[in-house]
Image (cartoon, rainbow, N blue to C red):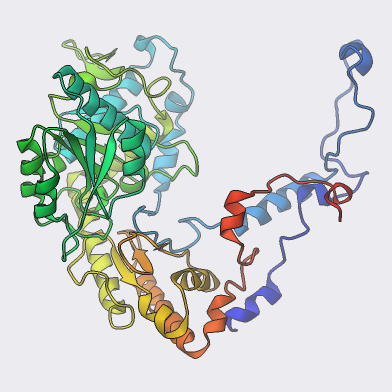
Length: 499
């Protein structure tokens, strides 16, 4: 069966909204006999009663179950297929982590309970702080931030507070041209000016250009290492040394920590601050808007500025909450997303130090293996040994056949794969950023390489095939620009919608 034939055997999702299923006589709830005095709606609501019944669906319980099962099957996640999303590690989430966070002692507690009744939870959080401090090579950690970008904001606010306390808040932050888009956004939110640092010919920071930009008005550099090209910066010690030379601080975007677990600690490379995406590195689910967690690790000099409260162990061996003396204040209610923290702690304890190192080794091996399988068909943006991810360029396909990277991404859906990140980093023409992670087997990588090569052949033989993709998904290609600018998410009865 060709990929174009699959739509013939898939039950379409269109026309099956819950409001459009069932019949007036259908129901899934039988109300118990009334055991209180009857009161009319008009009396109970003070006259504010609808003149027409609400347009609620009338369905049986089995209809509801099938409806949501059908919707769930239309979604794509790490449990349903390969998800090689570069720049945002999407790896398998171990089910033991889900079991642990649902234990009654964790799932049933409340943050307003007295400290004496939640010592186990506090001990877990303290243990996670200690583990993340060791991984980062930085002594102090806050678990409050609710996402990686939130961690960026927290870290940069701590940097600003540090400089302000030293008498000069400074005005500029340096950001490489390969940086995640959240970096300059965070800089702006903290009241700084973002200044772009160009990349050199090997995909790292141009050290000479950096040195020309450095002066005592620079507060920090925000640097991802390995960077978004999947490359470990060969000049990282020179970079952090030059930054410190003008009294500025070095911020590490921890999005790519998965590549260096147990191999390289950012603190040892001269970084002063780092956020850690638990969903990328430590096996917790991606939030899809929440909940998430983006802990921040800092040097001893910045520890007094961290948000409070933090968990500390007392001399007597109990655990308590303490707010640092110069804290920037809370950045989130309570102590963070506790269920996510339990998952990450379980992941770390299950693997141990040796296991975490193997995570990085396997992730790097998988990326380089897949890169070598594709390099003769898809040009590499930078022909170097990569870390956890690599970037291909589809520029040749566009010039030769008019096939864009977006077309390739949509065609991958027909083969059952989630597309890689496209058009990022911006410095690569028609970029395809691929991260296989350590959790995928060799057979999956081999099959994905075969599909990528097949799509390249399709682009040459029939470009229009790719322009029309996808063909087998519940929803065909959308006008993505219009969808973002004019979203229409509300269901309306056909008569109201003009049908």
